[in-house]
Length: 552
Image 1: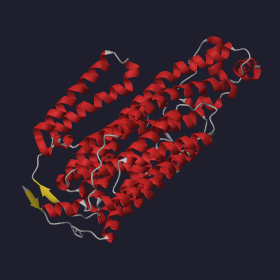
Image 2: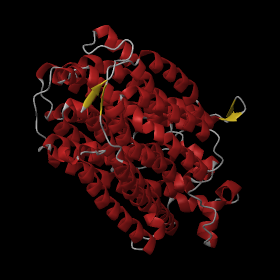
Image 3: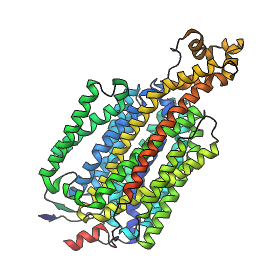
Image 4: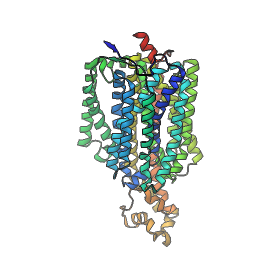
């Protein structure tokens, strides 16, 4: 039985345009934190890893963050449906700010991973709750009118994130603190402002329902996800058929079946109610979000490494070179939003987006040491356009397909499955990259050394080059078969190498990235096939608040 509770001050069921803009101003502050964090870390992770001596374990930093944000996302969605969006949005911002401050104090990569995990507890609610609140106050057909405000924030942060991250990473110290630490510390003042704004403006009505908290489901979800994601990151080190890998997979599978059983038993109070899986739009949309998350996060993790390691650009320069991807993503979102607002049709965009996404990934797999930056930018534009066509469209379709009382669950599910795919994609892509890069580098160096006419061999024969201490890692490897000087945990030695000696090492990195992007392209072809089965339902013309009020 539903028990109406008095609306918070300033609340109204049918909101005016001005009221919507006031609320959106608060949401934009929260989304700024989440969107900025997506890009600001990616361009600085190499510098952070080199400083903390752990490039090959950088996956833990990203994976830990994504694990906690993924697990917490459905919790935020369900609890906000029951208790209201405002308290949980404020909680998410607070946890994110505290986690950011902790990350800025990390002393090694594993400590940073632990603090990123805490930060992820807040991140899980930032995107999903902001999108759920928009679903509460704006009808699906009218959402494009307000989408531009969010695109302005997301686009600005996507542009500023790589630039700011690159600037911080490229600066030794700022106010007596290592430059890269400001990648995380910058969130603290922004978060305090966000808390102040959201606390003042976010007042929307809520009807509380009788409920049970799905603790068994939350525990089972954790048991399912953590071991599967750990084995995805550590499998290359342990061995995919080792006892530890098999044990993690077994625990994850048990967790999955336990989670399904728990959700069936608790019914409508489940984190993800089983009845929603009978909704074709919800099920197919969730599947597409998962697959797109694999490609999106995997690509965003690998591309900055290509630009910084293979193309030898600074973090700031690589941030600038990511701008075509941002432009494509913003253009795709704007075009799809305006078309949907005018016609009410949306199915074409997941289909077209998956084609562009697949094409972008395939083109990435053709990049090598000599690929022009103009060409790389064109590939990034295609990749971003595919992202823009898919992200908001799939969320809109899933929100529109469920009853208004499940708005939070539907929105958080879209974010949850995309993040779950992103967590898996990042772990697997980086595992493939660092699992193959050492052997590829060795084979490239050996091939270059066997060719007496290669620039590599001629450089080794030059006494000035061979006698330079900066070139010792390669010289010792070829002449003394000593590979101890080549440490992929700290790739900064590449910048000191003679250009001709560095060439095989860069080719080895590029070859590993070919495989990573080729796998991503194959995954996105699956999304293209599935997108044809997405139903196209008529978009509602009333907001979630209006629909719930009418039902009551």
